[in-house]
Image (cartoon, rainbow, N blue to C red; front, side, top):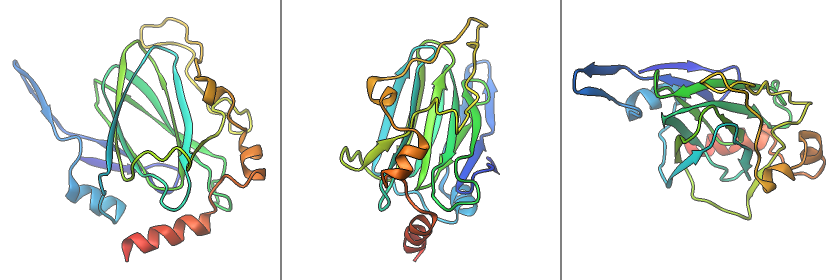
Length: 205
């Protein structure tokens, strides 16, 4: 496994080694030792999620209250998605910036994002399947969103599907009604970098 830290602190791209023959292939998509070396922590598994999305579907930008927030380890075993990490930590040097990784059934990469970060993805073909390992369970009263098309963030969502056909972003009603980053900050929904760092330090302790 090869870990590459993204431009947003607390997020990594993970590229596995694939072993194939005429029967198919095998890979390890999560392994505790290299994960702990890169992230300097273990990943407590509280919930595992799976979503299947039509081409153009955008899910996110989602985040959870700190503490405990929710760390995610995400991969796409079938299809393709553009996976996006957004720094929503008020006071962070990269606040409002984003980075992305193509997750697909070719390179079979994964993305890890630690607590306090925003997460979104766009499906690049029908029936794209995404699985997430989550550090905490779903908490509807503590989960929030930022509008994924907020021009102040400026995520460069793909305009073409994997087969070359045009893509139009398709959002859920909840995501469509999400505030902009500036509105979420004004409403006090966003975590501060100090709160996130304090919580991460408590995990290390």
